[in-house]
Image (cartoon, rainbow, N blue to C red):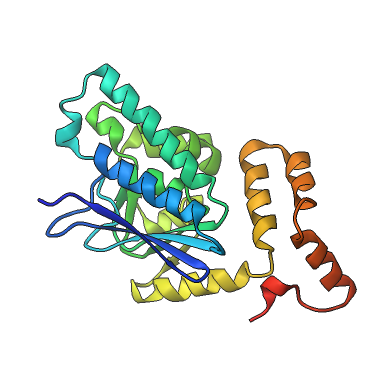
Length: 250
């Protein structure tokens, strides 16, 4: 089976990170993790990008990790992979653009952890999502324990991690793991467009500053940084002059 590929494309204010595997399921491995790191770095460097969507081709979003590769790990190799995985997921979470995991198929293990590192998750009704690692005698190693705890609270984080069973998109929405559920893949693009419109009033640099404040807790520093760019001047002037700010136009 071919290895999963990860490609970044940029179209105006939208960046797309696409997972695909010729003739097989999308799975994560150390080399695929590095491909994702490269794509995330490219999205961070892309100018004028306001939203980055992560999506996949094939039957699944990400089916999980490459278990055959992990079977050859010793404790040191496992530790290194977990550290690197956390670094990549942290970089994804820290992207200045709004990030959306677009789930058309199963998001399990590392796929669920990738989605947890995004700002929003949109799924079709048929999606199954979960962290099955404890069924292998393991735990999520790419930030899944911590992000599920912060997002879902202790009760559902424990059920998700300790139970090891995937849950439906509907249940995931009920507990806050998924933000929106659509009928099928055709509804995903419309949901993304709606989200872009809903979040279009926020200045790009202000949203990036707010994301930093969410992640670091340093709200005063992020607020200060708003006054180091011309965006706040434009936003304040637009309010006083009773017009739309430049980023709201079009």
